[in-house]
Image 1 (cartoon, rainbow, N blue to C red):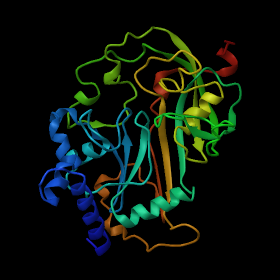
Image 2 (cartoon, rainbow, N blue to C red):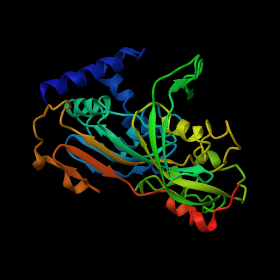
Image 3 (cartoon, one colour):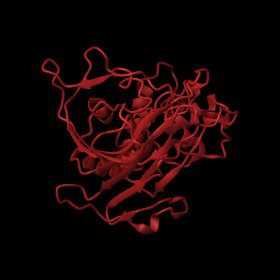
Length: 343
């Protein structure tokens, strides 16, 4: 461990100790709040083994499950970080967040393993050089096959959890999303298998868990499902900016909210009471050249841990990772011109 990493670890230790009110020493305070320790509150079989899409000595990219927070306390269930530490206890601490992904969203999520790699990735995000592609299932059939939405995003006054489209009184920040249709179809709200004892967090700890497409969430256990079929469109979303809830609000703006979006679907139509919000981070491309023409020292490829690499697409100083489509199997596909009806 180099000097800068030592300093970074020391800061984490001191910060953890400062926030604790007991009289334990720094190291015990840090361990008390470490995600690995927190997972001990749960039965081992309730902690999912999240799929690793890519791993080397500097970065870890995983296929985040839907309805799972990335970090924080685990009293309401395991987080991404606590689950990773449970199944991979030799991972360095801390795991450094370089971007955010909503609790309800699944898909590509990147963590940096060193302070240098975290810095490089954060610069790429800050300079908007990162390319992200999302998939979504939205309500209704879109009339056009391509859209470019440029609507500002603002925070709802008095509610830090909700966002809204900008207005004269609450202008917000500029936001831009490119949207492309790739399939039309019908989604049957009762089409997925019934709940069994091995769904979601009850899955065996030895089972690899990654964004299941046909598994209901714990919150939907007691909710009756209506056996109806609704028209939906599968779309690719490319955010040019990265505002909070941007994709969800831009889909709502078009009159085609994301299926299962508790916040923004029900604002303009009946909420689709299904097992998850249908938004997935399909692909993540992070250039690591330092930005603005600067080059960092080339990484030593001999240090790559090849036994853990899946779907690796790495050329020079670019990380390029993608996942499978979790929605295509949920939709009864149709040809727009042949099967579409007005509604």
